Amino acid sequence: MARTGRPREFDRDQALDAALTLFWEQGYEPTSLNQLKAHMGNISPASFYAAFGSKEALFREVVQRYLETYGQVMAPLWDQTLSPRDAIESTLRGSARMQTSRTHPAGCMIVLGACNCSPENQPVQTLLETERARSRSGFAACVKRAIANEELAASPATETLPTLFATFLHGLSCEARDGNRAKQLDAAITTLMQLWDSLAIQRGQVSHSP
Image (spheres, rainbow, N blue to C red):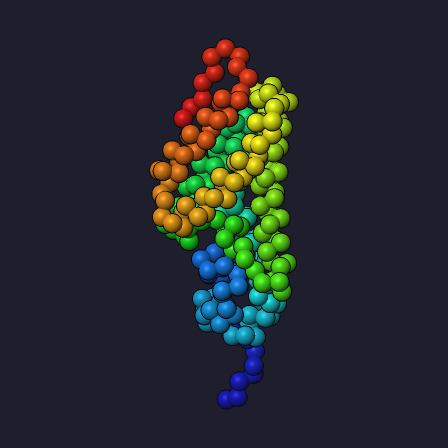
C-alpha cells in the first residue's frame, strides 16, 4: 500500500522536553536538526516543521518551557511577602540546588544556551540576554525595596549589589558545569550574604537564619 505522506503522530510534550535537555546540554548552535529529530523520538522532518516551524521557533518554545519549570527558582525575587534579603538568598540557594542537580544538565540554560552565537543567530542570543537582564532587574528591585524599607542604607557600595548578585548567579553555571557541588556553592552564598549584613542598617540585634 502506498504511503499517504501524512506525518506520523508523536507526543509533543515529550518531544519538547527532549529538545529542552539537548539545547540545555549543548547550546543552540551546536545542536543540529538531525540531533533534535533523533532525540525527539526520531520524528520525521514533516512532523518537526508542522509542530514547531523551525529550529529557532522550537528553541523559543523550549526557553518558555524552561522558565515555567526550572526557571521558577527565580520567583522569590518578585515575592513581596519575603523580605528583600530572604528573597535574594532563597533565589541564590534554589538556583544553586537546581543547577547542580544530577537529574538534568548542569548549569542554567538561560546562561549557557546561546552565549556565543554567530551573527545570523543574534536574535536567539538576544532572547537569553533579555531574560538575564530580567534577573538583574529582580535583584535591583529587591535592593531598592530594602533601601525604601530602611533595611539598607543608600550608598555607592549598596548600588553595586544588584550587579554583584547577578554576577554570582550567572557564574554558578560555570561552577556547576565544572563539577562544583551544591554544598560548596551553598557555603559561598552564606559568605556572600554576609556582605548584605555588613551594609544593613542595624536596629538592635538582628539575626538571620543560615
